[in-house]
Length: 135
Image 1 (cartoon, one colour):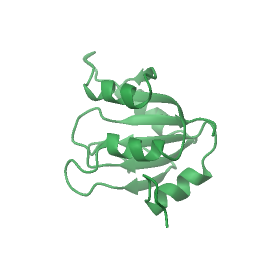
Image 2 (spheres, rainbow, N blue to C red):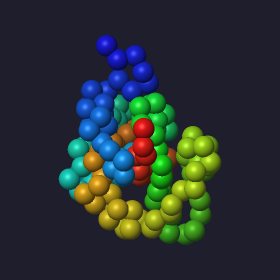
Image 3 (cartoon, rainbow, N blue to C red):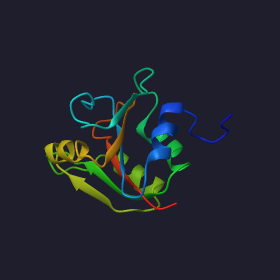
Image 4 (cartoon, one colour):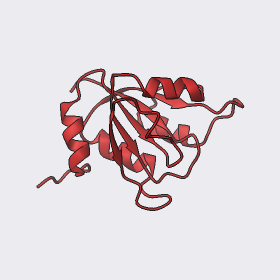
């Protein structure tokens, strides 16, 4: 029986097959996962509006893999969503690569994205594309 922070069998199965440089999308509840996740394995975790959050999922994933880079979807008006500060904090101050909406969609459809997770997150622009680092 698993005792760590990530116990979801589908997440563990896909994460265990990932290697250095593979990517994982953790998407808010507004993200069009069915059409903007390429060939990635899709996991729908949304239980109800607001649960789980993207940061809940990030915390669980960080307990089993190292993250070497992260990209976010930036609003077109140049503003910065508050969740970006929380991402930076959770990622040890890591610089977040910012992409426009359609650039982010394109990045999430690439073959190196192995896992795409839909959450119940309601905060807008709370989408995070992480790159797995070395063990």
